[in-house]
Image (cartoon, rainbow, N blue to C red):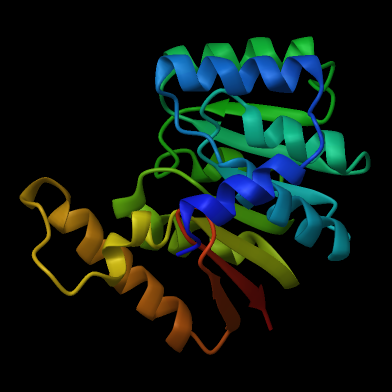
Length: 212
């Protein structure tokens, strides 16, 4: 994993975001809402831009931070995003409207494992971005990867979970199942012959898989 010192240095080089995005970042910090760290999202935005992504499915809206960042960075991109927490969903709706992006960001309220038929109506997608319940990544992948176009991307955030996934030592009981599931997910990505996957030790760990 990248050291905190290096991560802080890189973060200091990233240009200031607009007032609304900065406000969302502060809200997330104050309310304990998990959003992508600044270095990871900058890397993702660059990759999406280079791949000329036009339509993204996001599993895990939270308060709309990453969806707004993607829409801001890629003016031609449409985002469909799923969130099951009602309070966060309402905050995301508010943020998306304030950003004047409700014409390109479609929010779906519900458990991502239960709204597949609704999501299908928006597909296919150039990119699937998974950033929700870490213990369910494999199920999200199985449900939504068929909606990803050939040569499309699947981006999975938090796959190293603070480096704990790579730790051979004792894992705390409360996160043992989640870590086991993440390890199984990572191994599945690497042996899946339909995808080419690379892991990046930034933030909480990111996997980028290209569909053959």
